[in-house]
Length: 517
Image (cartoon, rainbow, N blue to C red; front, side):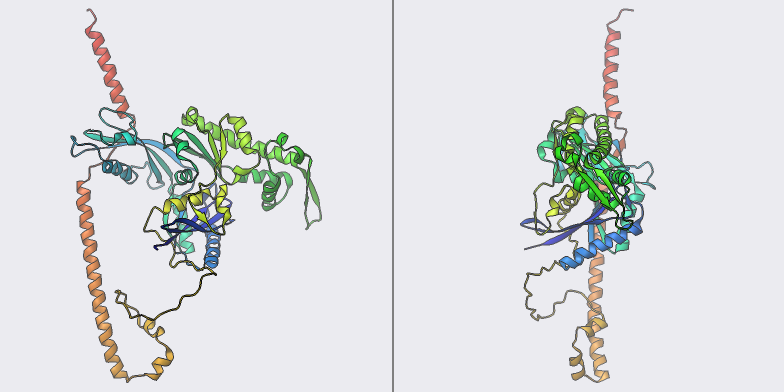
């Protein structure tokens, strides 16, 4: 059975999450998921690669030690904050205007949009993602992708949402992994893949807002008609709640986080018996102690949650899709499980609310935390990466303690084109055997010279064959590129203005024709 393994690293403001999954014909099996504290990351982006690399290196080492593996590449996510979205429109002239629009032409326009979009400042900006919103022909405006296939038109236009972020933030992710010594196989735009891991088909079709409350950033992603219509983020989240508790109690950040997880809740009027309880915080170093009522703690948390949710509701209204959310709001992220949070958001917004956990499209062994709301980004990256059939992040499969060691059977050597060094040849030969069967220096030199000459000759032939194949591949790509239609980016309002302007001009002309001088 063909098996491969994918490793994902979620770079969060408060945690580094490492996930390892096995991909096989039976499906996806999560083998490992662990969270550890992070450093050098703020508002979901890396601002200090050196500090972040130390934490990532330790987190990956723990995974390698437990699974007995060596991770040589990983998938990770792009920052969720400081991402802007712009409307864009691209078109190309079809070579056969009398034939029906094919799926290949639609995919060509979508797949090449990210490579050809002209960024305003390419030195400081990078494109995180492109999402097709609709398609346009000479006769139809804003047609859905499912409707455009099979139409006849001279041109094909695509209307896109382009998501642009800071290049430095993306480069810092590469710097972290370079210092750790692993390659970045893929960097994902997290809002898309997180939504795919949580939302159902019905929710994406009918309209839903996904609010992910992370530690350093809270994001809003809106779907309608099965298309991602809007994305925005704000630079505060669960860590702001922790900081409020830290300041009110005068404790460390770690203790404040534990207090939030153990006793934190929204809406003090809803916690009933707990509201009268008192938390005593002892300081063993100074011998002092402080008391904090659960009711007051809930009031502090509620105030900060109100600020976060109000900002998200403003983003929803700004998107223009506030009236199209038939399936309401889905809350996810590490802070989404605060008691009474969903009830409080429903009172503030009037939308139906549910907590978003990863959809069960996988199995897991020994890592139940993969089902938590804080793991949705990691699950999304694994599920997106599994579609790449050639991606394998491990140099060797994991070894489990309950597996029996297989007997090693000597086989005849196979000529695979690999030439070992002289040191490798001697290292693989038993020392005792070399001493007992020692040959005269002249005979040994003649034999080795003949072997190495043949091996080097085979290596040169293999190198020439690979060079010829690479040259043929490049020529084939150049020929394809010449045949591809040229994509032209235009103002997204040009088509609408042109059609409306023509209609207004016709009305005016008709009106003047019917008037007396």
